[in-house]
Amino acid sequence: MDLNQVTVETMEKGIQVNVYSERSCPGLLVFVLKVFEEFSLNVLEARVSCTGSFQLEALGVENEENGETIDTHMVKQAVLQAIQDWNESNDQE
Image (cartoon, rainbow, N blue to C red; front, side, top):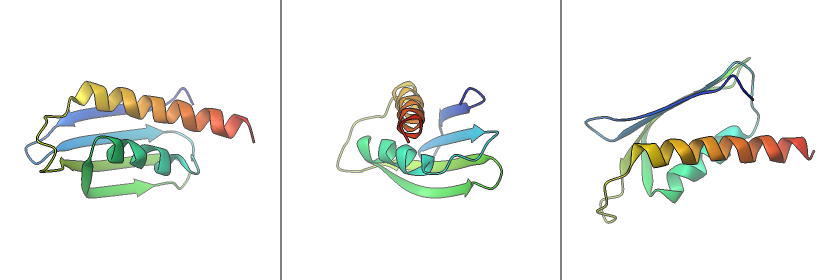
């Protein structure tokens, strides 16, 4: 999936993650949400569309107990890795 766009930015309330692909990507949402779990991010708001294309806009907030500031670059790399993992899992089917 080369036509992906992934952006991760710090917002006042948390971290905004946007993922876009021109094609539908069944199952990709699960892979991306695992990234939120890995970084102990709670999803505050999310919009997802999988009709014809894949679009995800999610606002994650850091788990209060964690106390660490989350690096947006690390989150972006993890999301890109999740997309690659999803791609590989689909190639095997």
